[in-house]
Length: 417
Image (cartoon, rainbow, N blue to C red; front, side, top):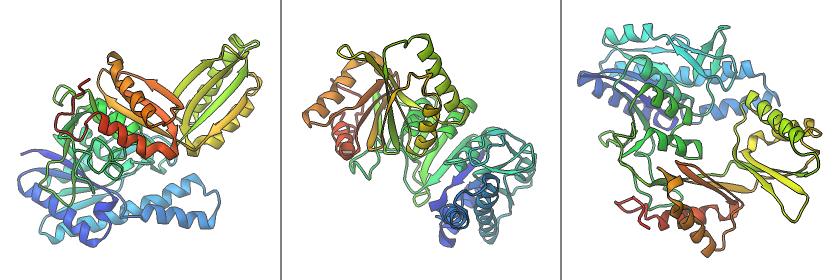
């Protein structure tokens, strides 16, 4: 038949009963003639519990020791999963990240996969075993255990699928696919049968929590199709994430909401703002890049009625203290700006294709929000998405209104002006 990689997240392996259910899915696929490799996360809230224990011991736990601690969660899962598969009469072998040949950088807690050396996984598959691999972890050149950060098991699964030339990577989770919006916010949200890598990447990068954005990037680079499907409805094919030529062409495919953003506004006097100010801004963003702090919604505003300029951007809330510290250290280079930080915001993104050539999409968004008297604080537009920032108190209402305006719950999802 073929070669498959299946990933089971924390909710799918939350207890022994669910581990057995996931094992049944893997064995069923193997019994149909497929070579099957599994990637598993830690059970349920194990990672959160381990973090809490570490914080009880130290206010600032050492990053290397945190990786040593957190990696144990997946080691428990792979052992139990292998036992469950064996109890069903199929051979299985478990592998830690190191044993699976997952080589990473040395940034503890946020390491990137540099290479997978899959010889041991290949040998296991050739012996007819189901290979059970720990997600979320790898090994650095210094032979230290590393973890990959949020969504790390998704990233492990897709990277492994590329390394062993799997025909597909199935992501089993507690939802039955990718929806036009989070059904907890919009109950009438519709499941998409297929979506392009590019559109899924935009949704993931702007707040959709179905998959990690890094895993979509890897899938796109290695041309690995992904199916997002439910562990509890294994016969349901879910949503296929694939090349844009194989996916329906939606003008608007869905909405995402991110409540973990903060906006930072720097208001600078216009005196001596040219070369020196540009150099200061360059230094700011260079430092943010060095610290792996992502920025979005970057805007430069000039005021005709004031002798000043405003420079604004958004970052994740957890990065705010570090960003403000960097701004303060670059104060003179930035023109000693007045700094305003707003953490009470929400970013809503409308994702689709060729949106820059369809100004009516932006018009519809603004018309809907204006009618509802919802203030828009920031807006950016690109080919694949339009993002707006609103006060967080209006977030859910705004998402529901925009979803309804574009008829995203209907079968015909394409935009009709």
